[in-house]
Length: 289
Image (cartoon, rainbow, N blue to C red; front, side, top):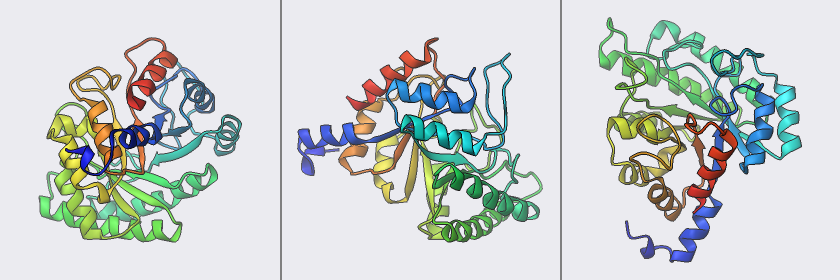
């Protein structure tokens, strides 16, 4: 990509510095309750977070704590530390909890979950939810699963529109982390988003998952930027720090900035460094150039 054709070097540098970064609070400081993690993330230099499920919280092995998140406590923690919540997860990758929209008999349960999660999101000032497809169903053909999924997402987008909310559909890798998941290719994800044709449904482009499945990250992301609502980042292999591994995130971030990407890049990685604060500071410094 010739960044200089549209931007000067200083312009690209400024755009990279201004790019919005958030941290997944399920994967860092995971010995603390959710609202305490918000403070730690802010101390490391990031002013936005995302979370997984509103009714569950991930802790380090051997650590127990409150699971269901407290919207009031999270809102207070965000206000205290000047942190925004950019997204949360609607349903689990397998379809649990919340329903698998590839199954027609689970569509109503899925749509009820969409309404429930949007209600929780409103309480913490969040305007975006990550939605999953569920796993492939051996009794269903790919065409039937695709049709079920598009029906469910079309109705979900109508719900999101009523609440001025954005749904982002996530494609995941089926080689390492999510065996059996339905949507494991960005191409099909973009096709589905375009078929629904709603400003309230876009694709979550997860660089970790798509590097494992297909590579060609910069060309794919920049060619389809209008249909991308959120981006996730983690190192490959291992899902660790973005400055380690085979993906050149510095080049990817510069390309996104040069194309004017205005959404968030979510740091959804598992720190290999024991000091999570140091890991985040080094990660933010690397990405901001």
